[in-house]
Amino acid sequence: MRRLGLVLASLTCGLSALGSLAALAQENVGVTRLDVAPKFPQNGYRPLPPHFQPRQTITAAPEVSIAPPILPVYEQPTIPGDGYLWVPGYWAWRKSVPDFFWVPGTWVHPPQTGLVWTPPYWSSVNGGYAFHAGYWAAQVGFYGGIAYGFGYNGNGYQGGRWEDGEFSYNRAYNNLGSVAVSRAYGQASASKERSSRVSYNGGPGGTTARPSRRQQELIDTRRFKATAEQRRHFKLAAMDRSLYSKLNNSEPAVAATQHAGVLTGREITSSRRSQQTAGSKKW
Image 1: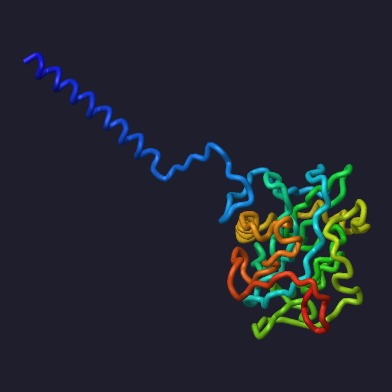
Image 2: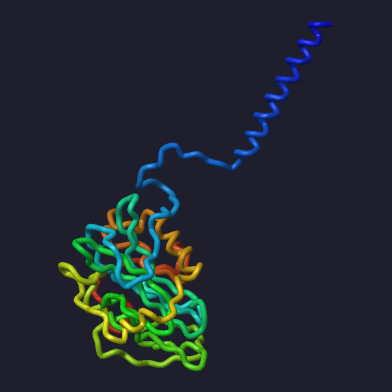
C-alpha cells in the first residue's frame, strides 16, 4: 500500500512537471531568440534599427563622419493617379552596418490638402554630417540647396501647386503618362535641373546654399511628419541589401518606384550613369 502511494505521488509530480513544461512551451510559441546578432550583409531582410530617428530642427548634431554618396541618375515612374505627390529619393544612414542606403523616390498621398513636401538633407556640422528630416507643410522650406530634380532644383518646388483644394501638376517636372489629372500646366524653370549630384550641404564639395530670410521664418510654421506610408517605405528600404552604397557602388538598382513600399515589379526604375537625354524626365 505504501509503495502504491509512492508511485502515485511520483506520477503526480511528473504530470505536474510536464504541465509546467507545456505551459512554458505555449508561452514561447512564435518567440525567436537571437543570442548573437547576424552579421551584415546576408540574404533576406533585417529589422530597422531603433537608432535612426528623424530630426525636426534645422540644426542637428554630427551623426556620420563621412559624406553621403552622390545622388543617382534615374527616371521618374509614372504617377499612379490624381492626388499623388512626388517625394524624391535620398541617402539615409544605418549605424549598425555601417553604411548609407538609398531610400527610393516614390509617389505618395499628402497627409492633408494644401501640404507640400520639404525633402530631407545632410549638412556638414563640426567635421561630421548631420541628417535633417523631411516634413510636410504649407510651403516648401530649406533643404540644403540639394538638386533632387523633378521640380526640386535646390530652392523651393517647381513641380506643382495647390489651387482651390486641388493639386495642379507641372508637366515639365512630373511624369503624368496617360493618367488623367484634374489640373496640369507646363512651365519650365529658368534654372538647370540637376546641375549637381552632390547630396549634402556645406563642407568640402558640398552645396553652399543658406536659408533665406523667408525660409528661416518657415522653421516656426506648423509641420507634419512623414506619413505612415512613407515610414513603411523607409523601413523596407533599410532592410534591402541592394540599396546599400557599399554593395551597389552608389548606383541602386531600385532608384525610384511608383508605389511607396513596393520595391519590385515593372513600376520601378534603376539608377543610370548615362547623361540626361533631351525631353526625358531623368535626373
